[in-house]
Length: 281
Image 1: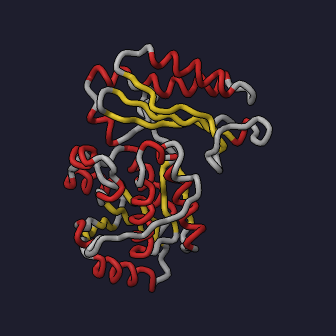
Image 2: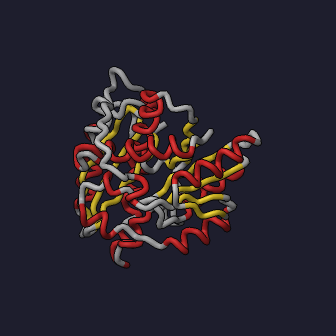
């Protein structure tokens, strides 16, 4: 596997592959790779001639400085995992390489980036959009792979590609879970043993919503689920909602059918913020 740090060197390497009509699959990450990331890598490897992964902890998408400082980093371990999964190239730029000057671009996603995660993490999705657009321009992939755990991020990226007319096909991939149902996340390693034992309750609550949701009882089932979760020591729900899976606007039985709905949750376990979702079709 080739490690590349400079944008120019990466473009040159990929242009040589592109000249041989090789397809390029791309998985952008912030490192601290887990099985969820590696499933994306394996899918990209199986569907393309070249698989490239980027590892870049993007500072401008963190609205909490402490979160940025605590974000786990283990480059050697990440590279070992990528090589084992069959990735051929990894792009590991420094912040100064990606942002030689401040990037002040502002994207208008309407309400899509202002609700849910956007309400609690202002500016987050604009930072995501800036770095993803930049990475797409550098890599020029045919296909890019993103996990459905970050459901709102996936919607933002699809909108970005549409708005900016970026010639890439976005491939959504199902959430990968631990044996007890907890969605895999780099943040999970920050959970204490006690918190880790509690964490699967988040997904169990989503399963309960799916089993109980009939297309009419959204408000009632959300209220009941929040009440149940609030009884769990150390767990604090930031939001829990049922939305249209395209617009992410709140479920409206007059305009949305059950099969087009998804339940989204963000919750704190101690100081660790976890998100998850489940499709209600």
